Amino acid sequence: MAGQAKVGSIAAIVTAVGYVLSVGALVVGTAMEKGDDSNDLPIIVGTWWLGSTVGTIAAAVVVYAAVRRSGGFAGALPKAAIVAAVLAAVVSAMPWAFFVWGLLLSVAMLLLALRLRSTGLGVAGRPSAWDWVVPVAFPLGVATTFGFYDTVVEASDNLDWAYTAGFSISLVMTAAAMIQAARWLRAPVEAATVASTI
Image (cartoon, rainbow, N blue to C red):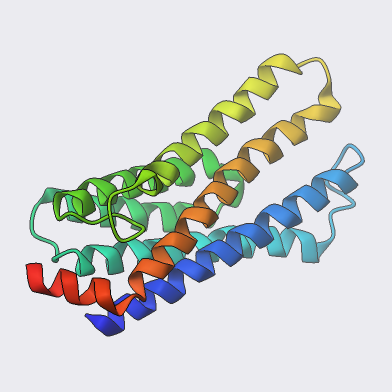
């Protein structure tokens, strides 16, 4: 279990770094855009794509590791959390569809939070507000995007910024929560505590 927790901790850092790089690439790409996609640099598109896809695959590993650390797969919540996380990882191969894979990841993290709290834990090691950050992050990002679309529908130059804003909010919030999860998953004291409850 300790080895899997360590892998989960590394995966959480991969998610955080990947998401931050993806956001940075998208912001730069949107700033450089001149009305079409013809000037998109491959390194920018590739960083955006790899950051979000690899980050989401790593997030699924985090969900798996956290479920293992909280006592295993008994019951519907942990199984459903893993299924939602795997589906998010698969759909994240289409990073532009963050409305879909992001919401799936939010569902996975919500179910994980409920599972962890049922054992007296949380994504930061104990129940805290961090448990709800990812479940809120992607719905907030989607709402931000559509809110901007609704308010700037006449200003086509701002439509890409609406998507960028929603995407960025979602991934930066998730990255912050994953850093907390990484600290918990690599903490030996918490590992001993969880092991004693199994």
